[in-house]
Length: 97
Ligand code: SF4
Ligand code: SF4
Image (cartoon, rainbow, N blue to C red):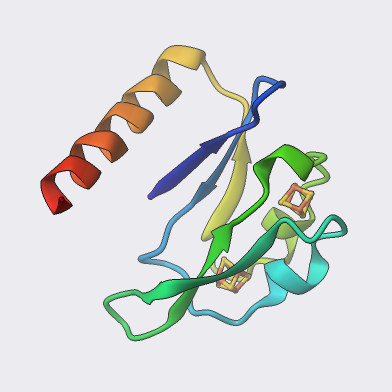
């Protein structure tokens, strides 16, 4: 999971790399060109979609709606829940380094 918080607004874009099959639909449908392909591949061998410009995101939900695998979505839930995800992600990154 990768969590991106909008720098000014209270919502998050979450990508679940394990579900992504690299079809590129979310990238093609994003009207603000926020998304692109990662340099990394998931366990299934797909080059996954990645948020590249969260600041430009307008929360239009096109990425979420276009993804056939529920691998990318907007989340507006409680701040605390997201903070847990961000913490978990940070811990995983620290383990990698
Ligand atoms: S919500 Fe809209 S603007 Fe934001 S990443 Fe998804 S498609 Fe792009
Ligand atoms: S639409 Fe879904 S499966 Fe396709 S690249 Fe985007 S996140 Fe991955």
